[in-house]
Image 1 (cartoon, one colour):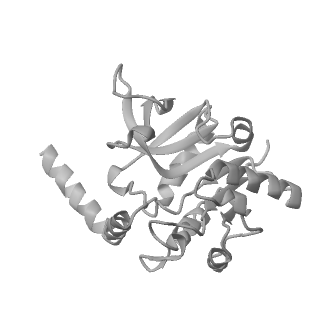
Image 2: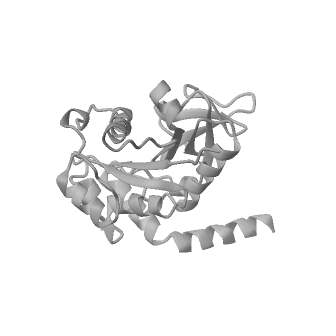
Image 3: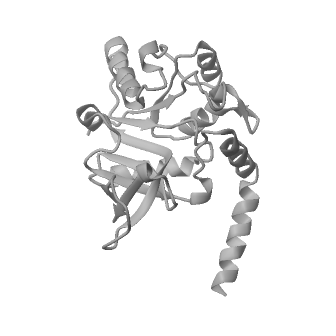
Length: 242
């Protein structure tokens, strides 16, 4: 049986207009990019952790926290209009050509989801191993932007273009926590949401995707008070069932 080789890739572009130097800024005591690195390192099934960046400064931080930065992202893939999938494919091809390394799976962890927990990633890994899915993404029950709406039934992604819940299909939003995909499917379909995608549902309260300063402040407040929030919600749920 072929041994799985899971490559964790953390995209961390140097440019950020809304929050300057976002990936290097201190979030709850460490650079934002470091949270994703340490979450990947805590997953026993991850074979290699790479930070994909165009910034030498971010590369230095990534290496300090134990990630691999074998090369910098080409400038043409580091523009505001650049697609993450193109950068990921570039990393896969470079590793194959330079090191002869080809992973069986790719795990994409975005730095803008610091409230993600290792358990979220582990659940995605279990789902892809125990199902016929070629990719697994994390979602949350929420009121997302129309472009992020997806429909889910029996933990499978039904459609990425929906307007309302019907026929037992509930609407969820992609929260950006985890994108896990078989390498062959990714290279063939050139996307993380493949034709056989399943989902792992995560709590809405942790699904803050940092894009603007207000979201940064909210995410950091939640991060620092996660234990208290969990205890409070557990008490609330208990009272509701009495």
